[in-house]
Length: 190
Image (tube, rainbow, N blue to C red; front, side, top):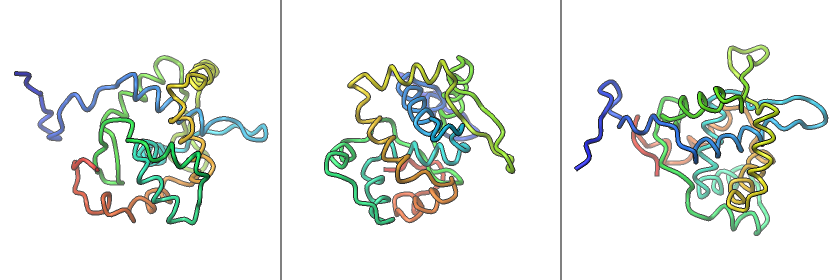
């Protein structure tokens, strides 16, 4: 029988803090989708709160569909079919500002440490922005050509098109979902 070691300060199994190739790929594609230049202007995905909320919607397509409906967005059937597929990854947990994955620090550390994602201070705030480096952008482009990432790529495009909002705005959208608002700290969100 395998014993799961638990970090006593959080009561969260230690394995939930580890990075995985799937999580790294998903976040690389998400960061790349939000840091691609539009009109020659350099961009970044603004902050961990926004990253976490977008990743939650990427992983929970049913919630994404409900958030889009709540803001009056109707998406084409071809995109809706992709949105209704099963969630992509392990469940997220409720933390102070809504859904959070304890592995984010390890995943971001791995992407940054390998030179795939860069971090820069955001103007007029104390936050940080994330963007793919040239090497990370090249890898994301190659991964995007792989059919096995088609669902992720479709969802990232939907997120950027309709939900490129501040982290606070995204948090407000998510708190309208009972599954998020009614959950307690460290509870897995369904």
